[in-house]
Amino acid sequence: MSQGADRYWQRTSGLMWTMMALWLVFSFVIHFFVNSLNSIVIAGFPLGFYMAAQGSLVVFVVMLFFFAKRQDTIDREEGVAEED
Image 1 (cartoon, rainbow, N blue to C red):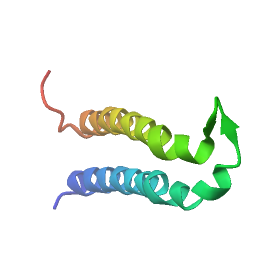
Image 2: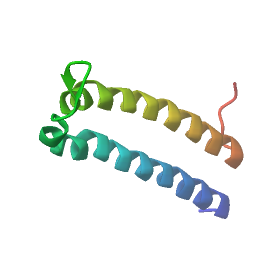
Image 3: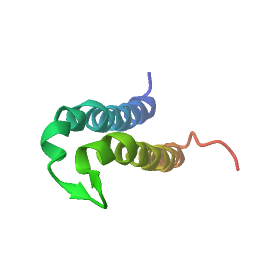
Image 4: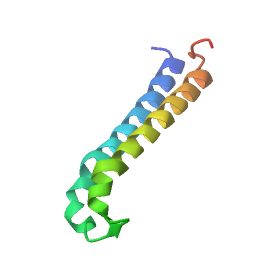
């Protein structure tokens, strides 16, 4: 494997592992604290319920757009981007 391909893979896999860690946090870790978060009420809804039902979904959508933009940037910098 060439040095450029190694660097491309390191950057891509680093992005992937970062996104996986964030996914783990917003999928599981926050939900472990639902009971303690439920003591905080916002607009009539317990915060734990809100984070489980809405907050995580919003974060996932933001993560998808961030991942796509960042991967496109990596592809362009490494010269492997698809043509527009």
